[in-house]
Image (tube, rainbow, N blue to C red; front, side, top):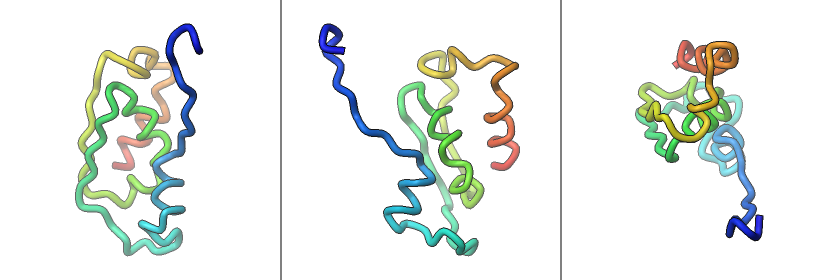
Length: 89
C-alpha cells in the first residue's frame, strides 16, 4: 500500500452505522426515511448491499449507476443481491 500512497481505513455498513449511531431503533418499523442520496464515486453497490435493512425503510433512494468501482465487476451472474435490493426499494 505504501508505494501507492494508500492508507487503510475502517469501513462500516450503512445498516450498522444507522443502528449503532442510534439514528434508528432496530425493532421500530415506524422509523422511516423520506429520501436517501448515495454518492460514493462508483461504490454505490457496496452501500446498497450493506444497507438493505435501512433501505427497506426508505421511500426514495437516489444513486448513480456508474462505470467505475464495483459496477465494473457486476455481471448478470453476481447481480442477484442488487436486484433483490432494488426490488425491495
